[in-house]
Image (cartoon, rainbow, N blue to C red; front, side, top):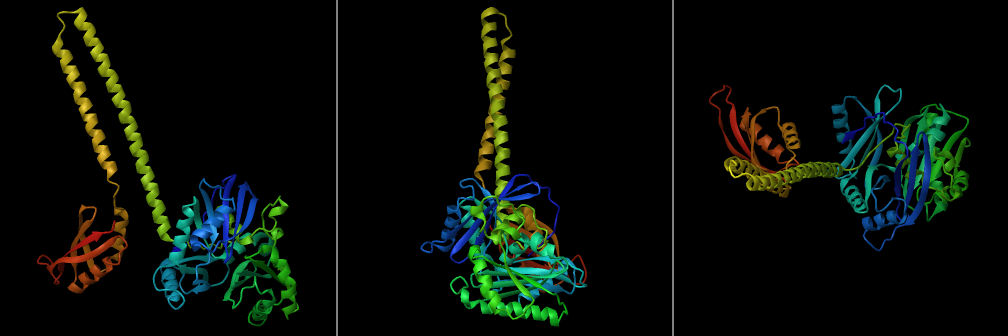
Length: 502
């Protein structure tokens, strides 16, 4: 679980990114470019997903068919991908300290039966506001589908840097022209994403309310079922007027449909007919509500959700709402790749210097041989012993260089290594307070021994059980445990043997 820290970034002029919004049958792709403070739409596309092939492979192929990813070159992309089941909710923290916040969020998420107990990706961000209690937006989803779809896109040279809920991307896309321009008024955003509906309310530009609901129908195939959506909008407005006494002459409600942005304007009149509250005005979100320059009329009906995901990678996030569900496994894989590239570059530089040095030695040897030949022809009383000593020194240097080359080849053939810093950090965090680590020894890259003191045998067994849960340790076993004769209070000497994961 990662907590967002908002930083100030230097604007990268002419940076290009891709935004992807995944629906059940279609995938929407946009390509944006930032030039100073301007965000320009370079292209948009909506591709039907081929259901005949595997889900993730067909989705990746649809993204490539859009011809907006810059294939075959690598491109960075932000994505909105629905991994069912998933959760998005606003929580009030009883304690705003980071450790207490993480513990509280984890305990709350355990209460939701729709989420599995293991392999859950969690992220949250603080919501700005003037309330006494600190509120956070929490997102959670199964890790497996997120990992698989990211790896499948990496095969197509699309590097996913952000996976976020669709409503978060929509908020970012229309924040300046819809939410910020409303001032202190209440503004509601409604997003229809296949059979999922998300409704959020901004009160005085503060993310104040969020409701997600799974519909029993797909609005793309049954647009006449807008009465269900209207009922939800009416209930939220009534809640604000009765419970929060927040009455206003007009309640602006902005609607977006991910499955087909062009259909949004067709749904708005039907939705307005079913709304009972007179002060509610429903407006379809289009390109005029998004702070993006669109010069090509053919791209006017682009996905605002996909645009919001791409804007985050362009350092545009005035809403300060950000949830990144990119699995930690992807971060570790990319970190290992960067380390491997660094090692390969260092090895290449070393080999280059060796080859240059060998060339220098070869030239030096050739010059010595030529000089020897000239002196043998011109001088009969030449001191041959000095020349032999010089040549012997050159030969010794050549042999040493050859040995260095063999040593480098042997080192490069062994591509297995352990991230000892990560192993030590994980072991130290797993150690209970009743156990002291005195020494860690590693004979090779597959085994490590931990030796120290514990207050009793139960503490040792607890430490062994915790080590078996480490990501870097394959198995941990107690090799030896006995009473310590040096210290009082019946302390226990222990020795634990751990086999490491490759």
